Each structure stands twice: as C-alpha cells, then as structure tokens.
Length: 207
Image (tube, rainbow, N blue to C red; front, side, top):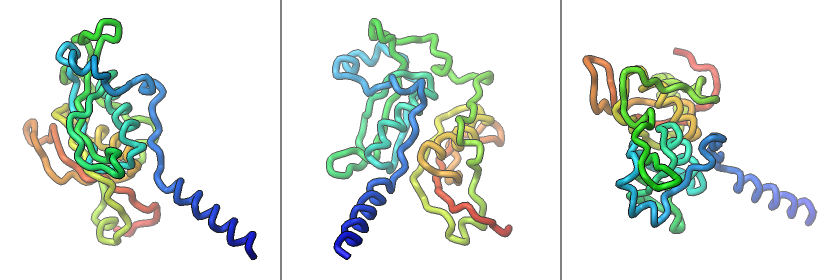
C-alpha cells in the first residue's frame, strides 16, 4: 500500500511538471538572443524590424517565443523594453523590440528583406500551423475553448494577416484565433489587427 501511494505521488508530480507545452524553437532561431548590455547601448545602429507583445505565457516560453518571432521578422536580437507581468520574478508578459544587427560590428543590416513591408513580401505558414483557423461561433457557445492570450499583428499586407495569426497561435500553443479589433485597413481589407488566441478541444462540432 505504501509503495502504491509513493508511486502515485511521483506520477502526480510528473504530470504537474509537464502541464505546460514548451514552444518548439525553429532550428534557425536557436542562435537568436536577447541583446547584451553593450548591444543595448548601440541598438540605434541596428535595423529595427518590429515589436512583439506577449500578454501571458509560461516563463519558460517567453524567450522561446521571442526567438521564433524575431527570426520570422528577419532579426537576430531582441530587447525586452517592458515587463507586463511576472511569476516569482520571472516574466510572463513582455513588450519586446526586435532588431537585425551585424554581429561582427554591432551595426545594423539595412538590407534585411523584412525590414520594409512591401507588396511582394508574404508570410508563409510554419510546420504545424496549417490546422490553425478562425474560431467558430459553435466552438465558443459550447465552451470548447480556452483563451491563451492576445496577439497584435503589426501593419502588413492583407494577405499576411491569416498566416501571421495561424503561426502565432500555433507558437502560443493554440489552434484557433478570433480577431477582436481591426487597427488599420487597405480598402476594406485589414492590414493590422488584435486577436485572441484559443486552445480548442478536438471534437465534432455541429454548425
């Protein structure tokens, strides 16, 4: 009986420790790092490629998400400009600036292809994000989904909105998203939005 109780406690501890799914870091993004104090003093010499806000994430996933997003934007360094929330002094919500720096001199790389948004630039879906889509009313009404956080898509081509949301939702551990606010448009098409990210149970939904 004692052995059974001990094994149950061990199993429960293991489950708790594995409760949060770690975000997979792209192989190409593993070399991306937070700016060092020396790089911060010279960040004006780097090419600014965008910002990224994490509203709520597991502390272990903050740097992983920033690495992936920085890579997607064409950068190689990120700087956390504001901490929004913490757990035991570890950040769970941050605002970060993303940069592309010349790692040999610390100077910017103006030729970065993602530094300037143009009509020829397109966001491609990362592996695993193809199944992510906008949430349905039926899924919301049936309480099948859990909100993981929010994401702001910076100004981009209208055709990049859905791939951006799918990629980010997947990296946050979600499989659905819902646009809550349109920030800017080109004609009638959104070019910048704010969206909630959800994790929904996989089961048949009757529309």
